Length: 319
Image (cartoon, rainbow, N blue to C red):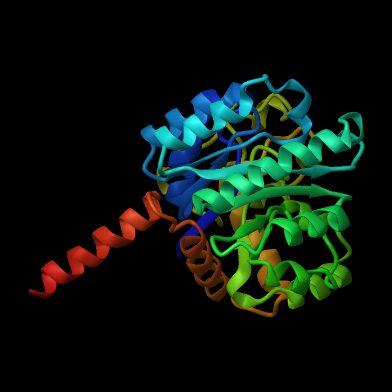
């Protein structure tokens, strides 16, 4: 069973020093690719380096709405140059936010920066990973004015209504689900998931955030996470680990909102979404994996190159 983490932040300062172990253990659990999203000019070089170092990392560059006020006067030219020198990259994380943190950032500036990046994604024929908090009406209006998006646009950690799904889908949207889905009522989540076309469903972790709600014995933890009690803040040897043999077995462990989310916890998201959709885990894993491969198979992408290598290998072996 292969999984594709369609949105995460492995360059985050909270986990960057642990990235080799995190990627290795997640890959061992069955996660074969990670779309690593930058959030500001400050981390694009790190994301680019990770993309060059790890075959499983798809780099993505963008300015997250929380960091709009920190952008430099040359930010857009810098962004374009990153795409010119990194053809493997997608666009993200970009978006709109009217939540508690987003309200601190001028919304008209958010819209301007978002629209520029969205238009660039369309021009470059690359998918864009979109953050949206309490601004789905604004988002739909902008997507309608700039779209449609033949190369796709991904609504990451989607928590919008079921009613808006068809409108977004018509424009080329994919819908990605993380541990944040568990904050929505089960009834509402099920209704929304059932509205999503099966060829547009993606899974993600948003690591190191969005820790899924689960017994601690079912979770992977980041080695050395300072939020964990001392007996639980180091990982076991993961050579023999799998998604149902987590690093920490203590069900009584107290977790806080600061607890770091390991990308191998995508298995928890998979199980939850599959349950709500009345699907088998293996069926949803294959479906979401193929959807992600399709979305990330733009010109120059690693995924497209891997598919071409596999095709040529098959032809060669067939001869």
